[in-house]
Amino acid sequence: MVLGVCALASCGGGGGGGSSAPAPPSGGGVGPTATSLSAATDTANNNALCSAIAPFYWEIGNDKGALASGSVGVDSTGSPVTTSTKVSIASASKWVYGTYIVQVRGSAAALTAQDIPFLNFTSGYTNMTTSLTSSDCPPPASGADTVNACLTQINPANGQPFSFQVPNTIGFFDYNSGHLENHASQLGGLGDTANSDLGTVVGQELGANIDFIYTEPLIAGGIYTSASVYAQILQGILSGALAMHDALDTGAVCTQPSAPGCNAVFSPIPEAWHYSIAHWIEDDPSTHGDGAFSSPGAFGFYPWIEASKAYYGLVSREAPPAGVSGEQQGYASVKCGRLIRHAWDTGAEQTGNIPN
Image 1: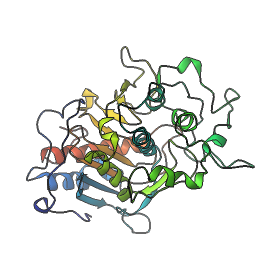
Image 2: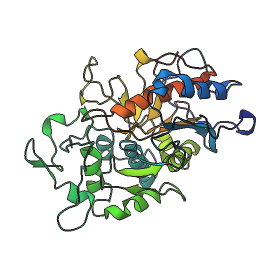
Image 3: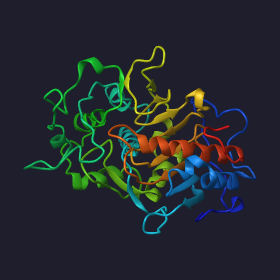
Image 4: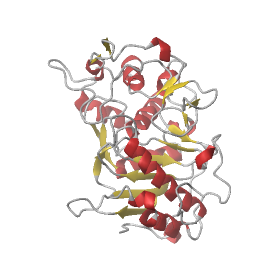
């Protein structure tokens, strides 16, 4: 079932802006073409990788707003996922925090040498444990429920607090919530902000109508919000109203430990992507990576901005995690979402497992 798809003739054009990220795969430019709308819709409705993640809502738009959208499948109550459905976005929270910090600093160029290792996950603050089925930052027995309180939690594996810097991971990409939690405490000015106020403090820097909450003071994964709110952030990045526009691709590092010459410890993504300022760069040539910027979350929420910075997109869903660590449902959404993106870019329905 498809909801809310607008006609191309009334959608308007795309935004602009260059990028140093890889160009899209050969075989098509960046849409819309005369068939982009039908290609993206048919891909979302018919491709097996998309059917596998239903129910979900998808959207593609530019800096002015949504250009195409749809809802595939229904939940156990018979209800579709829509733009206003609120979900836990897990690691899509990372890109929100990165965007917040760049905005507070005033520009991408104003990010400091101290900021960047925290934001591209090479800081060595990798001692946070991760649970996808319970709180990573449970409320303290007494005192304020804050980032700083969360950092006093102890990792049972080594008896050290979440604020501990692990020496042998300094300078190496290691996907861990500790980077952003410690940045928020040490350099982000949010350490003592009550969890009930975190969403307001962060959101007010990102736009007039940005309204979300943190279910716990977990900077890297605690946001609960809707596709409509996240889309406004992506629109602000595309328009340049948010300084993250120029931070996309900044400080990028390799992430795949198995890749030759890559200084990396752990990545939940099984592809050789790069990682920038709290977001991924989807540039693995083996899967026809198009250089899109993204931040998939463990429960399936997947936002992106394509390499041209002309369009954003997202897949919104919330599903139980498959396994105990990493971005399993997020990666499942990636495999569908990038096909929708490529269908839009080229005007050709995607019937395979990777963009053609």
